[in-house]
Image (tube, rainbow, N blue to C red; front, side, top):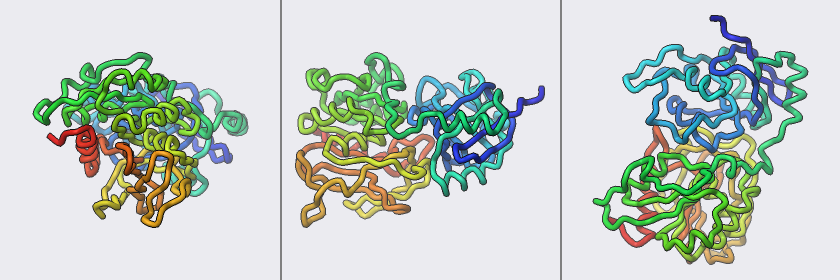
Length: 381
């Protein structure tokens, strides 16, 4: 069967002609690229990619197929998927379907046969931008016009659209927490786009997690008597996630807080900081981040298009940011571009990182942070 022709258009008028795999139709979103050589199934199912058309820089994708164990959420989340070549055969004993099968079942359009190097260079040079991929509108002028009419990522509140509709126990998905770590702590996790491997890593540290919808009032969490609060990753503009900022602000100082990715941005906003949209963001598994407390450099996995502005706060002579909740150490920094990657509150129990310490399939350099969260709740096993 001959694959349908497909067209990918960027808002600046750049065009890429290819063929469809997965579903047919059309979709619009923000064009971004990911540098991982593996982990495409985790990328596809990461809620933080909601509303984005993801280009993989490694030339062949789908070699080892997909399975029911590795997804980071219950469905494919990307708006579209662009690759140089999609493997027709899944070569792994764990495979249950091909990459194309997974996209087709999810109704998500994939495009292959395009020059992903040229697309990556364009996005790297001009920045992430609106895009469309289509098998039905193959008129370049028409598709570009429709791309330019689509909404951008700035100002987009997407967390509520990917969050769980009702609370649930993480043990239903990842099993019971490891009781050999010591007393089992109870944590309330805000689902702004929760990745399942976060729940696995919490459970491995002896933490029982109850996952709550993104718009859950802070008063409900506070009344639950939890030992800690976790702020998850998620898509969209953090400044537009007003309910997450308000809940974080209300819970600060009452219970230990740990945030990842969007959760880190929400903590920064709750502390009185500001965020900004990055030109092209960080998406991949090879970002070097220095922890100022230890001097160590961690190789880390990223997926974010916004960041906290370190110039948001005045500083004391020791370099601590001064906030309404006390001093804050701007603790982690990206060594590629100087982006702020983490913060630790000194006077209240709260910390967060912009990257993904739970990263699947890896790297695993930063998994110790889940142990630090456990320590903050009163025990180190």
